[in-house]
Image (cartoon, rainbow, N blue to C red; front, side, top):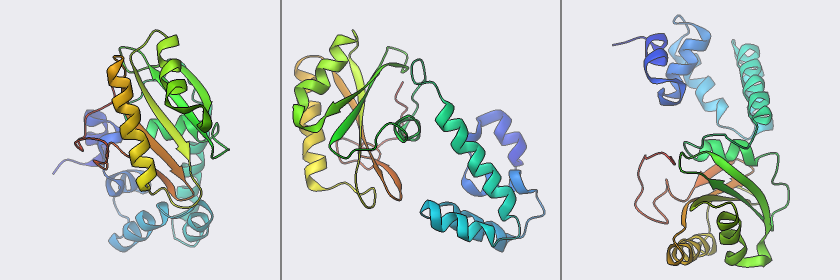
Length: 204
């Protein structure tokens, strides 16, 4: 079995499971139970996550890594960023979506890079979302919205995205995905199989 550093060089960090990344960060001698505890803590709500990590043997190092990752996300320039999946959408949207009634429209060029990024009021409807994509001279986009509570799609969320995708298809626009940001993280309606077949293909 190949070791995480070799996997990282060959596949990239995105392809590695959480446990492999933790072993790479904390060293191969970390105990199996500590890996389990750290992996569980990383997926808690931010405040609970910090409290859980600080009590672990390697907690300070993990907290430093999490904070560095957060700062890297916030520093990401939006235009020209290649979106490979919902985690990239969440990274760009987290600091820009503070009001629930708004949608963030990320317009993609032919290579899957962000060509335009704008906020649209929820009341403006599907036409406003599709117009943002057309104005940029593109034919693909991703939408993202913040919700209160957990990142769990409702029936209305799914219906809205299905309707938006169908409307886009009539004018040659592909709405690739709908991402919801919640208090506990984010979810992708595409990856959940709620607006089409679930698959692992990238946005590009």
